[in-house]
Each structure stands twice: as C-alpha cells, then as structure tokens.
Image (tube, rainbow, N blue to C red; front, side):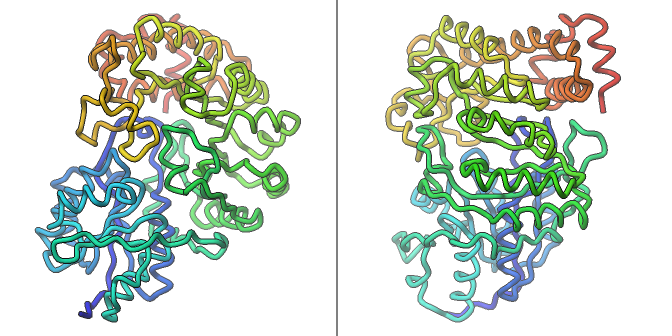
Length: 491
C-alpha cells in the first residue's frame, strides 16, 4: 500500500536531567545529519528541538498542533524514552493520520519492549544509524515496496513484531551533509563563555573499546570510522563563518584514536587559526601518548578535555573494562592542566559492594587525582549493557527517566537508594569545598575565570542546585575573596 509522504518533522523529546543544562545548550547533531540525507531524497524537513527550547508537554502539544507533517521522527536515549513516547502519543492525538518513527540507542536495543508497550503510538523503529535507513524506509512507504526488504527497521506485522536485519554502517562519513541551516542557532550557547554560540561536530564515529557499562561501544558494534581531516576542518570553518559558532563540542566517543590523523587535524587547526574554542572527550592513554604534542592541543584552541576515569580502584576499573591503571589517570589529568587546559572526569559510585567507607575512599582518591572538575555518578545499568545481568537483582528503579547517572538505580548490599544519593551529594559538596581555593588562586587568568564561572553555573543550573541552595553548601565555606571573584566572573 502506497503512502503519500512529503513533510518530515524531526524532534528531540522534552527531557531534562539537570546535567548538561548547567553548561550550555547543545544542537541535536544526529537529527542534523539525518535531515541532510532526507533532503537529498526530496523530502521537506523541519527540526523541532523541544529539549533545547525547554518546552513542557503542553507546549509540545501546542507546537505539534500548529505544524504540518506526514512523519514525526523522534530520537531517544534510555533516560528520555518516556518523554519521547509521550511525544509520539501526543502526535497521534493531534495528527492521527501521521506516521511516527523512533530511533537512537534505546530503541535500537529495546524495540521489542517498546512496541509491545506502545504499539498504538510507534509505527516504526530505526535501529543503528538513521541517515540511510530513514529515507529508504520513507521511499518504500511511498512506493509500496515490501518493508521486509528495508534493512534496519522494526514494525508491527499483524500481531507480531517484525525486525529486519541490521543495516551496515555508512562507510564514507565525508559524503554526509549536515543540514545546519535548519537549526535556530540563537538557542545554542556555552554558558561558561559569555556571548558564545555553541556547535557540535563529529570527526569520527564509534569506539573499538569494550567498557562494560557503555552504550556507545555496543551501538557502534565496536566499529570505528573517521571523517577525513580536510572534511572535518571544512565543517568547522562552515560553522564558524556561516553560523558564527565560536565554541564547538567534538562529540565523538573517541576522536584521538589515530595519532597521525589527529595530529594532522591539530596542525590544520593551528594553521587556520579559527575563532573557535573546542571541547572534547578522549581516553587517558591518548593523553599520555600525546604528552609531547599537548602544546598543539592548546594552540589548536582546545580548552576543555573530559577523560574517562570512572573509578579510583583497580578492581572497579577492571570490572568496567577500562584498560587503564589508576596512576595513569592521575598523570593524564595533571598533563591536561599543565598545558593550560581544563580537565574533567567522573567517578562511578553505587556498585553492589559499595559502602560508606568505600565512597569515602573514592572521595579522597578523587582529590588525589585532582581533576579541575570531578563528577560523582550513580552507576546506571542500561538494560542492554554488558553489566545489566550482573546488576539486575539489585535494581530498585524501573522508571527509565531516572536512568540518567544522577538518580541511584540499584541498591548496594549495605546502602539504600536514599543513603547512596546522600553520599553522592556529600561527595560533590566536599570535593568542591576542597577545590575552591585552587580555583581562586590559579595563576592562569583564563583558567581561573573559566573554573569560577563553571562552578557557579553548576551550583545554579544543575541538579545540585536544590542541595547546594538548601544550606549554602559551597558559599558558606568560601573565603570572601572567592565570592567576589565568582561574582565578577559570573555571566
């Protein structure tokens, strides 16, 4: 049966956890890439970024009522799946004739559960990358092609659920054309830098490592593909010159894997001297590998690096399959700061054997590591992760909207969820009380102002706000000069 399809609305769900919002507002890069490929096939595409707009469900309803679309496509991770499903439900109420499509990590693995529970609101699920599959699916619906021939989709077939074989990943990333022009660029800001415009960009996709808690290595099937250095620089220049983007998050899981390619990117960035500051995430061992060229990182205007530390004891690192040693993490963090950049990492708490004593030890070792910013995260057993089966008997929360690394999900053998949450908040309070004198006395003016702004934003905008505000947790312990400097640095 043929279906007339012309107008596509791609959307983010109205979900907020109180983490990234404290630092800024980030463009939905995945939707930008999919929109570009849909346009190549002649479809009219609009992006509705309800997450960045901070819309409520009522505002989502009002906006969906005003928009005309034949297909609504929503991207969702585990934490946002409840909001995403509700968005599709609203779409079916206000536009019952429209089709709904869901994609990204959670639907890729939990499609059976999703369609069994929401068969009336989800028409199709796209598994894996969507750039090729989405237009192929729409073309099949338009021409009446047998859906069994469309790789990478899931749908209801009578009373059963049909899942076609996974589609191969895009081999040549250079051929993709992101639809940057569909974004409302006034939304995207990096709060730490006043008057900034925030962009996101990929230089690669995938990760060949096998961290047991990670969803990305499983989503990408431990594959790894790279954008050519020339194409990466071309996209960065486009964002800067056409859309006035001056802060960019390199959103790869692992941008620095290939040293030769990565150094070529750094050299090109240095020679172009673009007015763009860069944020990125990479691995501890690559910082150690690149210690002789870390000066190039900073000269290329990389200002903030997150490294995956995750644990302060070797037993946990081995369980998480991090393939690093504790002291290597400390040295990597030191090298980042020594080269004038901001270091950030996280420490995962709440495994079944966690105790108040082990958390206290983690806090002290976090101070020993001494990152500029440390985060204390509750272990979150994604239902498709390698760790899930071993943690399943300890899970006490089934509401996926709480699977955000903030809310404790599992009870340890000695601590309740409430006790674990209190311990996590205490770690944040104690760690940043300890960090404040370092921030204030940092001799590097850029680093000092950046650190102070970031700390105030974290206190004011993140999930920590209600805990910090309740008893002036940080301000109470600040020297007056710290508060003055933070006020001067505030945006």
